[in-house]
Amino acid sequence: MIIRDKPTKWSVYLLKFFLLLLIIYGVLLIPSSDPSVPKNLAGSPFVWNQDERWEAIEIRFSEARKEGCNMLKEKVDKSFESCEKLIAQISLGEYDVQDS
Image (cartoon, rainbow, N blue to C red; front, side, top):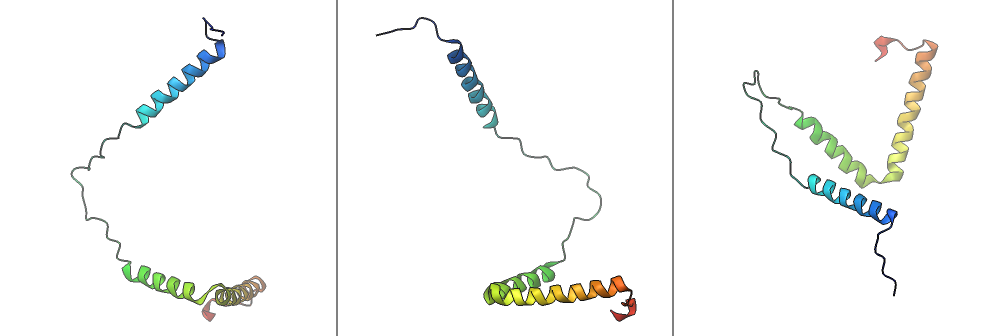
């Protein structure tokens, strides 16, 4: 049975490294303080006022999910084709702003 009296250089470094990791972990476990609320706020609070828009987007998303990928692929392809036609018209100068 061999008993070492003096630890090796690497084992000391390894022990220090794990001790440092343990200290960092302990510091990170300390909860942060609650953010303070600013005082003397001027003006009115922010109001979103876009509920109808988001509800419409949600409805369209639900319908698209029900239709499935194959039906959506056809719709997306048609939309890309119309966009490509519009880009071609614009690049050739054939599109008038009044057309929209």
